[in-house]
Amino acid sequence: MQISKVETLTPYEAGKIIGKNQEYIRAGLRVNRFNFGSAVPPKKEGGKWNYNIIKSKFLEYARDKR
Image (cartoon, rainbow, N blue to C red; front, side, top):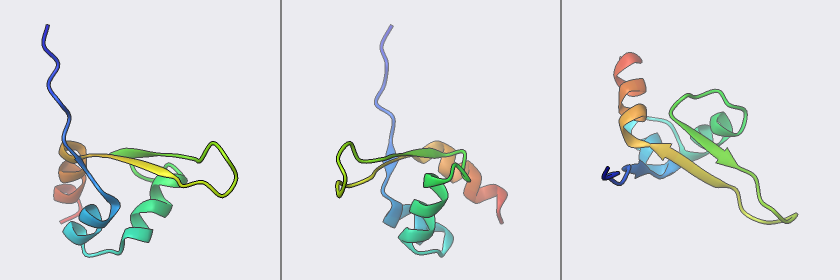
């Protein structure tokens, strides 16, 4: 079985598509408001959050919001 690579978006790219800024996307992912991705907190204090936005799920979300 071959698993294909999942296409992802950055918070900036996702925000541009729906007319919001990237912090709107980041904040929503941090509180599990969206079903198209996830936010992973930093391992160390002061570290960076990581965001995983699945492109196909995000585009489905964006279509539903129109």
